Amino acid sequence: MSLNLKGIFSALVRSFLRLVPLAILACDIAPEVGPATVERCSNGDSEPDTDVSFAREIQPIFFRANGGCAQCHDPNGSNPVGVQLGGLDLSTYEALRRGGSQSASNIIVPGEPCNSDLYLKVTAGPRFGSRMPLDGPPFLGEDDLRLLSDWIAEGAENDL
Image 1: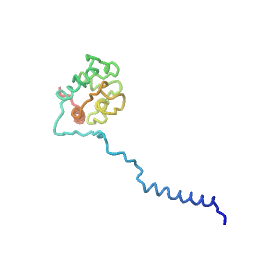
Image 2: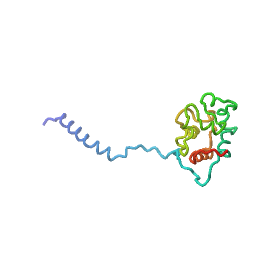
Image 3: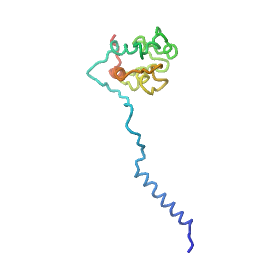
Image 4: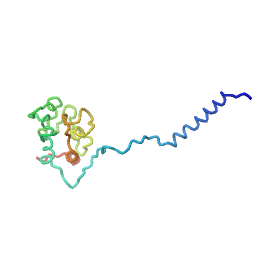
């Protein structure tokens, strides 16, 4: 009795190929990566019954001495590189709404912090360029990020 190795091998390959699709369907092929380490962006207002004031809460974040924005994004700031290179002036509400050379009208999309470059640039992973402030950390804390997000979610109104 001679062994037909070629026939045996062919039969094994055919059996294997029939079982592979079943094995794939039976497996959960999504990798286990663990829980999210960062919250996803939300366009919602975290405190809908409380209005955020541009004059009292948002603008002071821009002009904070440590971790603020005005040093670079105010034409009269100590190092106005953000105005000179990026064209983004945060010295007034009107200048802010004009946006910069890359953000333009997307600097603030009222009601949509997740599509607003102002908010995205101060969070991890902005759509373009580096996270701000460029010389951070420190970066904006959770409370400041929540205020900025809520202000944009509420329509980013000027209350000066």
